[in-house]
Length: 345
Image (cartoon, rainbow, N blue to C red; front, side, top):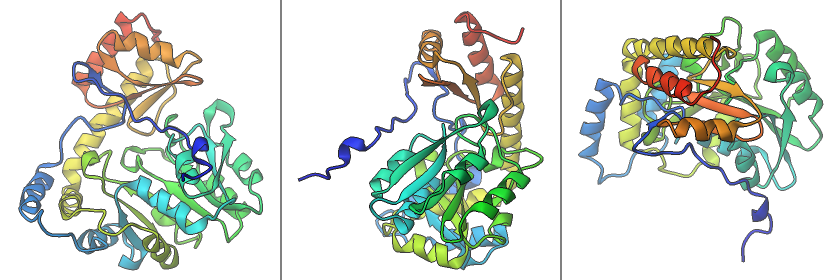
């Protein structure tokens, strides 16, 4: 009655929640939607009895204008995750392979399995950096899709432009690559690829971004993909219809129009991110979280939870803390010290 391969599906678990504790486990913004987005939400809510227009044309045009692309190069979806899932559906059949560095976003193996493909995890390289040479070496005749998370979740590290150029030189033209840039707005690395620029060079490349992180719209589920029109049309063919509500669409459009307000929030997060990494003696991150490599991640999570803060542990490799504003980071660092966990001082 059920699929024979269901036992192979990984059980994706989102960041834990507890209303009595400070939640720093899901890389969410701690602020609400931008004021103009809230106005758009209120207006759209009055029309919730009507279906949205398929394809989110208003947001699609706004994104094309903002990115300097044509509307045919942009697809709207319920989050960057949906773009990645649709990329699996449009490229893979049973027995095909989806490659990605590991550790990375926990849902990648699930996306591959749901699409009937085999997930292939390529170990990170020295210093837990993404090893694009190793990813290229892992390509086989069964490879159909490669996912690169930049900055990588949960390590927060980026790849360089030269690394990406050399990698794409080695990728066959019939293998699709997707740059998952969910944390794009926080990425202030001086030397790293930008998917909007890179898709002009590579017809087999897609970019994926979201309004869930920097824009504070995680609960509305809206993101977008972009690439050459052939790939974007294919994304649409495998997408479920009417998944992005008009409320989400118009909130995202309003958020794009409030770019200056957004960047004030982003700058605060970047400042606190660098502060936390420095005080804990950790490697700098380029996202809205900091990675703590260790072999006792579950113990670290438990200790700081007892002090009123929830972070996310990866029992075999470390723990990750989401970064928000100065007030919450003060709370986090105080709890960290009370828990007796190590700092740089």
